Image (spheres, rainbow, N blue to C red):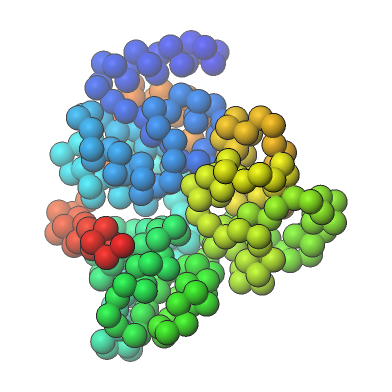
Amino acid sequence: MDKNELIKNILELKKKRNAVIVAHNYQMDDVQEIADVVGDSFALSKFCASNNYDVVVFCGVHFMAESAKILSPEKTVLLPERDAGCPMADMITAKDLREKKAQHPGAAVVCYINSSAEVKAESDVCCTSSNAINVVRALKEKDIIFVPDQNLGSYVAKMVPEKNIILWNGFCITHHRIKIDEVKEIKKHYPDAEILIHPECKPELVELADFVGSTKQIIDHAAQSDRKEFIIGTEMGVLYKLKKDNPDKKFYLMSQGLICTNMKKTTLNSVYEALRDMKYEVKLDEEIRIKAKRALDRMLEVV
């Protein structure tokens, strides 16, 4: 099928299944175009929980579809590409976290949303890249085990120095691979450009930023800024919305390595097949789901 026929069939199946298609900001342009909603992972999960669709097609990676299922257990949640995972989420297991907790009794566990349902279930509270600072600051405990992203955790530690942040040695392989020389070099080419960086990047890169924030915060900042040129330090998929929303501004990718291969696995064809065959359904153990939901609920309570 050509693109137009694929889109026609997707829309027909979506109506037939009473389905909604949500896509993360890092998805392929074609996938973002046909999605009903595009955004950050937790915002998409909250959207899914607040509507009456029977089926959710989550164009993202596994932990994101899990989060949607945690909040919407009655809905059928489909992940179009079964092997679209997150290497950072795979860098810690529930067993790993239990062992870490045993080493630091009395410490609160703050779990970045980029993690499995099992790890969320072992945590006291979840956070996103946009609210991590506020979540940590709101906790009464001084000692905080922060998992799994060492870079986001380091940024939080810098911003909340009154807390003792115990880091896990995990990272986003896409953000982590950017080299400081690349940032300095591109700044030479575009000296007037504002540097916008995701806190999943290494601390020495974050130090060079004019603005540090989540994907949505980067999108919002670029739209509100009076500046006309921006160097973007997050996954390349965000350029689609940045350019679409700001046709009068210029955006330069900080590094050509800012590509998440897992996010790029989902295609129009895989969305079509997911709706046609109702695959691949995300299922969770109910006990784990309930515990993981507590950590997500507490995040909303403390910020």
